[in-house]
Length: 215
Length: 268
Image 1 (spheres, one colour):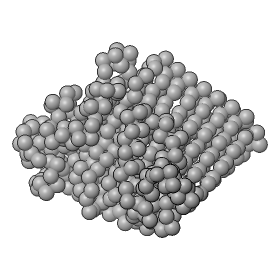
Image 2 (cartoon, rainbow over the protein chains, first blue to last red):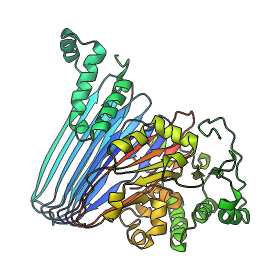
Image 3 (tube, chains in turn cyan, orange):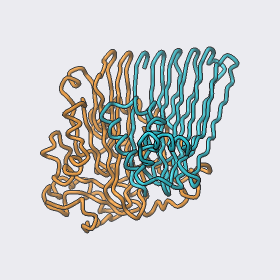
Image 4 (cartoon, each protein chain N blue to C red):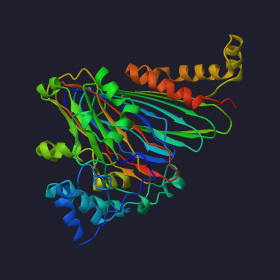
């Protein structure tokens, strides 16, 4: 409804034999704000693309997703935003970490209808690969039917660089601790959006996930 | 107390007689099945999906006719829709829809106090730290085990402000007019194969309505857990934030490790 604010936070940590196939969608009316905060750690295959339809003037949408794909896992996640009114804005931040042969995919769609004048789109996808066996793919799609929309898109794929690990080890950290620190730094923008208890829990989960992952 | 956390426990299959058995099952469930007996205090239907299973779920929940019709129609849509041809099609095509339990009712009643939640389920949520988190920083908590919400509690202040936070099934019973207006209005069953499946067999999930101008400053939380092997959990969540209101909803999900696969397909 008008002027309303909804934030929906998910931390999914399913066992590695669960298919997690979820449809999530929100409609944002005039001057309202919808935020999806979505963390996918477990499951065998996740296919989930939270969606926001910005149908009211001045509506804002933000989708923040994190996926961690380990051995035998495929995290196919992303975001979908539809701009169907003037002065709407959206921000998508998608981060993924792949390790031990895990696979992560970002699949996103941003669509702007001709009436979405003065709208803003900001998409950022970052993927971190922890070893050579893992894989990451990015499939961003933008369908912009209005010439008065501002779009920013950034994507990056990085590997944990040996020199970063080496540098941290020279400061007295073990190789494990060094990697953990790099991963935590990478995820920080996501973790800080979580309520404190969840942030602590997520950090602990990542620590467990990272144990002995030195390749 | 039954050890329902033990996957080795053999649960007698409820005989799903396709013509007459179902009717008895739905109407006599409460009187026929006691709370304390290990084999009777929860219901586990047969594996697989068909119109009879959909009918059983709807009958056990004593749903209005429009919802029952909606479920049957959605099942037809599910049959008609192809699997997505994108994403990881190899893994998707490995899903055996006949090898999944679509509805498991873990306890007879939903509880407002953790003391009334069956001991073993309570232990699970204790181990997961849910009651502790509730005391510390949450305004309302809902805990779903397999298909049904077993625990639900909301702080009195919220109720006084007119906030509705309940499980989807109670939402349908107690606020049918709102549910009927908004249910599946954003994600119709025709959207995709899995939203159709969820529409046919949905159970549990959250229903939230925040009245105009109300700011729910503390988060509401739902916790979902799959316990049984080959279980399909299909929760359905609907959140309506009226003019100028604010709400933060958190969901968390876990399941133990088994060798066979389970399916979690929610619609939010």
